[in-house]
Image (cartoon, rainbow, N blue to C red; front, side, top):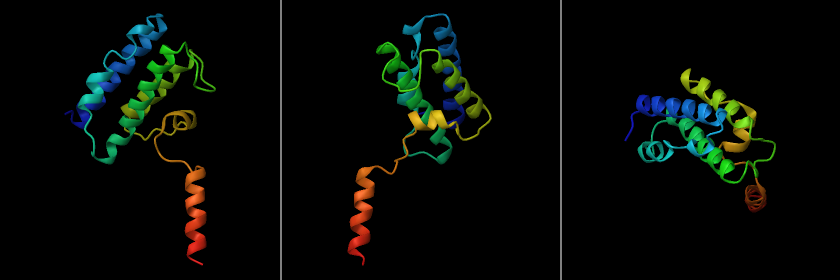
Length: 129
């Protein structure tokens, strides 16, 4: 398992390499370090790891987008992925939470207030009356 510092360094190095690969059109190289990172990222870890899990999801989706000819990510084009990776790199380098709205919209795992949550809240409220 990686420590936070090891995970951070590995991720930053890997995303930087993937930006370069993307820019050169070497799309198959994107994600070469993904499995090692995923396997060594400790689960049930401290809150400092939250941004690394968000980056892990972004990285997984970057590969998925590549595998599907840059489709299925509404509002994102092939050219957007390196730009978003640079935002993630900057935030993680500076130990800031990732706050970019486009990144959070597409890649954050936090539950939204979806239909199931609204229905549950409605019936819970009604039963408490």
